[in-house]
Image (cartoon, rainbow, N blue to C red; front, side, top):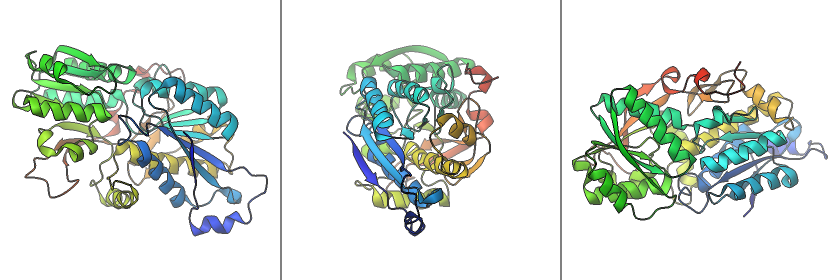
Length: 402
């Protein structure tokens, strides 16, 4: 279950290492995600690679303190994720836990991290409760959340004429909140929710659900699921010919889906994402480097890119604190003090509730004829500034907000 990779870092790190204090323990970062299930391609080893790049790019901590990456598979089980988090902190000396897709797991781990006064940064985690009623002073939500994804996409699709919605929803915390966010935005924009159906995590056959959607009279199928469930839904929707009568809206669809299925299966789907590999030169440079390292030569998605950016900011913060990492609340408070110029996400600030604010891209899948080659899957429709993309802080119910 536990895999540890000691990162050599840059030449500067090696130069400092010889002067490191003998009693200085390494700074340990644990990448906790799904390494073998429905989210393995969406986070998995890719998140570990991204964190490794951040450590290498950062260089050395004060005093030459080493940085160590651990990784583990929570198998989408909250009890297992919680057990790993406790072991990491109590026995392995982990200072920061990173990524944590699956909202039920993320909520469980965030509470343990708060109790132990360490740091958690969610990149794959989705539920907006993490910066709402379940917020903690030791958590930062970096990449996306269900409020942002659901509201941004719901508004956009209704504006384009998609008025009647049917939701296909993963039956756990993430899916429920994502559906709720989209439905709220759809109604506020003048649309209507015709119906919904919920499916277990890891469903292989979506035919019964797609038949219900097709016969509902809705003109939009909202996908409140992710990972392999999302990919299987799109694949089977193409087989059913749903794109002839319904448009697809996928708030957490990303480049892994068209790579697995081909652009013909995407039906011009609209998505929202804070990172796209071909957005600008820094994103392209990171993506090519990531692709060369990834065992299947995948391009990075937004959540994997988030693991890079969040780790880099965390390490810079630790350096600014003189290398001290034992007080998670103090570390997160320092992360919130000033905006950062992030190479992949743009200007980013972290609010009092732990929400990282950065621009968000509204994108549409290209047709096969528009694509210029492998991984050229999406085109930008618009760029949403932070004040239009994220939930107003006063609406979240976070107890940290005065």
